[in-house]
Length: 263
Image 1 (spheres, rainbow, N blue to C red):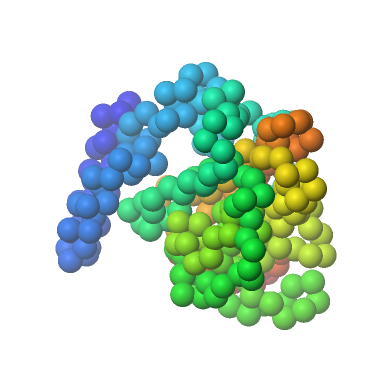
Image 2: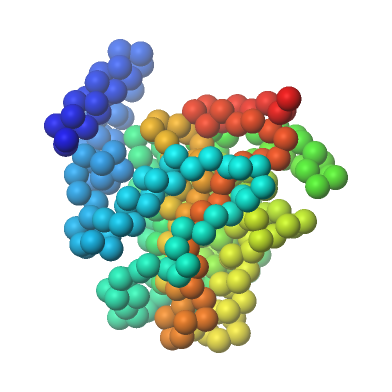
């Protein structure tokens, strides 16, 4: 199986080289990064090496790629409670955050954290307009009766939780409806981010957090985002959900980021 995957990646490498030979050195460098083989499923991921729970988690991520938005439920429940291992819930290292290196297409990867009050920002968010994540083909739209933009520079781990500003490893192309739908917060990331942030502020406890962007093949825009959270000192916060990266009344070309009004 792995031989077939390696052959597929080799063919892709050659095709890109033939189309854009000037990118050979950057592609060569990208394919030597440890995380690239993992993201392309050539080698065992850390999750796979952690046993059955890790295998189940990876399988669920693969299954999410085939999920189709039904036009009503932008958020679906993956598991009733978060499925972190005991080791992943350890507080031995205190609060921390970790972001994946960009892959060979410059796409973001999994973001992980042990969130605590000490990671939360003490100042206003800085300008992040210098970052253009993959598939950034933005346009003005009407949403919730107001003029808005189709895409936001969406944080994997929200600014209010991490204090991260223009971190290219933490920003992806997310629709307005996915990032922050203030008319229906429960359908967007902001609801879950506020839930975690308010809990941390009120209790000063910790929350294990993981955000996984779900890309299909070589598409530049994520099909959706998997959000997982588990409070450590108690069981108050525990969720595992998937949010479709869609926008009402618009059709998105996930390969390029272009879009058009629905018929």
